[in-house]
Image (cartoon, rainbow, N blue to C red; front, side):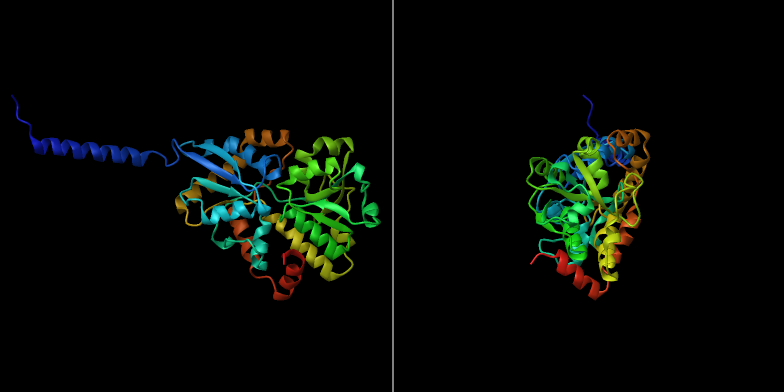
Length: 342
């Protein structure tokens, strides 16, 4: 009977452990894992539509090809999802968040319910800059700016308790004096569309990209009409739709529209990772996001879904958000009067 040589067995075990450790180290971190994208609004709206299109292609651009899962976390005008990404989501590179960047300005203004520091998120990028517009149902009777301005009673606009639909409505009322009654509380723009079609509200203001992608049949048939765009210059597809800033009667009104509605379009659709996410994983995700937005299959999907793609880099997002913290106190005071809930 042969004797067991313990030193030899121990050496073999050590070698095997070292080999397994080396093999594991060589495998991509994301191999066999799930990457979750938390969308801070309900299914069916623009944020959800963009995310699901990106999720179908993102995994193949990440080493290890993880499975990408989309989870909706709607509520409080995107605050629930944004706060979750800051306070709860693990900073391990396996969770991304997508919520409306207008919350960054509200943080600067001291809005209630903001439980994050925008400067500490790890920005991944954005798929597009917002092209903001207002659309109403034909049945509401608001089919032009002349009719809106001449309305004898406030026109009901749908809101989500924060974000573009609410902020645009408040700003247009304050800066242009338009007759507006904001009806907040909807979970997303898909619910606002349904409310408009049922006659609960006349319509709402959010992004032309989303309106075109998710309300296309009504727009094409004339049952929904875009009557105003909030951009520095006309969108190629909305050449006959007037610009909001052209109705401003003072420099102050023009400045408020620019800073409060137009500028946020640059940082309105960010994808972020939680603070503290390892830098190497942040770089992997940024690179993969950029490659996804160039992917011919993603671009074909976007065209089919009528989604514009205009990549905003993480660095551009960081610069825009940092600029919010440098606004003058006087301007911030005026914006606070318009936007911040009491």
